Length: 268
Image 1: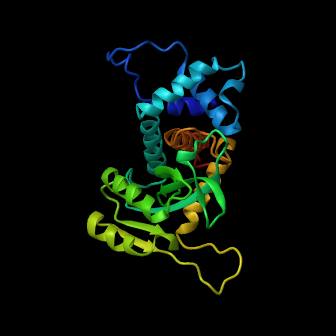
Image 2: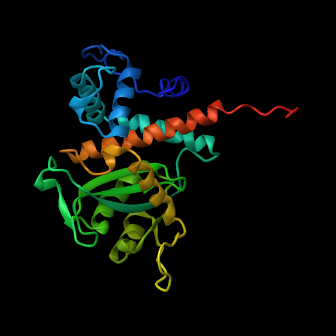
Image 3: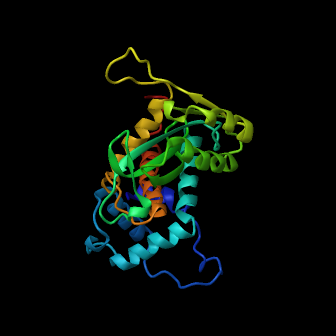
């Protein structure tokens, strides 16, 4: 991280339990070093044991990563950064509309058979990432499942959790994979309008569909992190944590770039 990125993120970090008087072993390394190490792993797609010597020892970095994954601290940091980005864009901290879509990726040999599947439509043996984003493309929630899981089945898990966390959410855009009984189910049980944006059959090749292109761009953002080019994680919650770390880095850079912009003066 640059100094400006660290200046922005350090005040948003959740307070560890041992600093809040809740007990536990004090941490022996600076948070900036640890976050830099995790971001390096996510961005470059290295193995944990291949952590460069410039960073703390890889077992300590891995312990830092797992503690924040299990305690939900990485999710908390992600949500604080998202609210800061939305506020900077002139939006409210909580969205009222979202876009949902999925992406199938190949799984590495380290992924167990029980947590992987075959996506017959994409012909991919691996896992599927189900993303819910706001209209800026920022991540609201993520669910990682075997690739054989249908979009409708995953939406029955993803959308109720999102409605619980974002009470202002009233409309969700989706593609044709979410048609059918799911539309009536979301309206009846969640009070959400599921708006299916269909592709025009007479158009050949690439087609930028209204609203749906936003989540497709979010998938492209994630694939710039080499750790996410395919799924290497043994656990699905680890895959979800890596996705959140990738978005944390993106939002942190965006906030720092806006903060570093010179303030226009009357003379200019």
